[in-house]
Image (tube, rainbow over all chains, first blue to last red; front, side, top):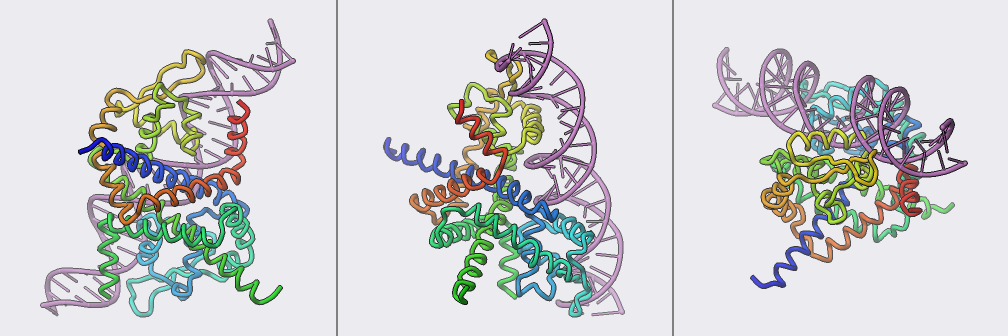
Length: 171
Length: 171
DNA sequence: ATTTTTATGTCAACATGTTTACGTAATTAT
DNA sequence: ATAATTACGTAAACATGTTGACATAAAAAT
């Protein structure tokens, strides 16, 4: 193997190193600044993610805990605690699935939907504006594209996510 | 305000929503798959970040806990626990700073450096290859650029990080 | 009808992240 | 010299994330 190949390999490794370290830093800051942005409402970025998911048209009539965990890419056990905290705040509720009595459907309460639409949107759009300062629409689309692509790779690395995907594809 | 303006604004919000949700998902998967990749060595992604930071030329002779926390963008209290676990594993050590007796410098032990160089690199390069499948060198550079840019915005949103930056700039 | 699978709940142990707060010791500023 | 600041350790309380394990009840397969 030539010297240049070695150098190229070392450069590639340094590039990857930097990339994932930046991702790690961004993740830390996302949660730190995001939670602070919604401090007035006592909502964390994770709760934000749950509430946002529940406003999706597909989940509007309720979603099973397991499906929500698959969607958010967190564990069922972790999500259970998150949901119980949101339930205690009166923002979400559980209803038994008419089609499957084993399944409880999580959905927003009227209070939860109101909080999301009328109160949180002010801080959320402010946060978006701050965190995406200097990003053109094209930049945003490109970044989303890269994150999408990386996410697919991550899922391929995760045995559970892969089988869950296959299961979903087989339905 | 015209109807098109409203639509543009809604589209922008949907775009930002998707972007940060992807970032949230990528962060979850980074820790899940990254920790699993290094499972054989009992190293988590956070410990990985610490060890990686300590191999930087600037930190090779040791770095103060506070400076390391600033660099990793985590709190000092959190880092203390992380370091004590790495210390218990014999991977890092603390030494008193000759220039400032208040300050303890964290640095890799011989064991730690050996683990990083001889053992972890195999799994790390495998993880990089998997998570960046389909990414050209240009893609990686562009993604790093976007993450860098977003990180700067996050820091601007964080009162502490901003003051720390200013403090550093003033030195 | 009986067995197996599935969905959820729950408990436990652990690592990571936050914040607030207090003590101590060393340095720096006055 | 005295006072203020700085660096660290440490503790507590909390929210998030992981894994593993076990119980239960309903659905699905045999």
